[in-house]
Amino acid sequence: MRRSPAHRAFLSAALLVGCSVGCSVGCNGLDVVPIFTTDTCEHNGLDVASREVTVAYPLDGDTFETTEGETVRLLGVDAPEIEHPTIAEECWGPQSADWLAAELTGQRVQLAFDKECVDTYGRTLAYVRVSSSGAGTVVDTGDTADTGQASGSIEFDLLINEQSVRLGQSTVYEDFDDIKLKDVLYAAQAVAQRESAGLWGVCESA
Image (cartoon, rainbow, N blue to C red):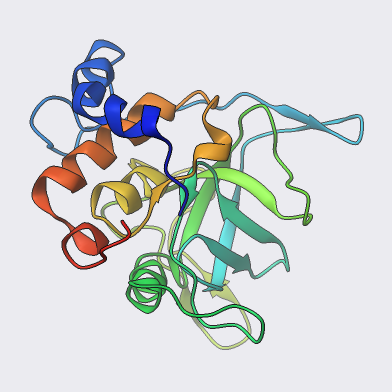
């Protein structure tokens, strides 16, 4: 998890900046639906638009696989690493992965995009929204999977990217510091730091 001196200086003012743009955390850390973009982005000459997918399983704290075989990376979020053959486990990595699994596994979610929608590894970069009511939970009926609601009727009112940062399951990914929702994420991170949430209360390198 990379940190810059400018970032640490910025954190103290992040809540005020976020409030001025109507951020999700506001000035009191309450859950308010954040600013959300449904803009398309261009990849390989084609416009990629907001869409719904079903989450099969998370790969770690900031990446998941869909039932359609697509790998999605939470835009603007940097979760600690879990153990891989060539990568050592980082502090809070397993907890972050478990949190994302509990939040997203079997969920119908909405993807929306920013300037870039695919990273250098071919993963989809997205803002990910879910239903806070659990309406997007997929029910396994054997041969088919059904959310119990008609497509398009689910209210996607919770931004997982912001929730992950605010609860200390991840930090702001500074390589994407020019994204549209950067103030939302930085404000969420300021709340997590203030409350010593998740990794901020445990990991010395946070």
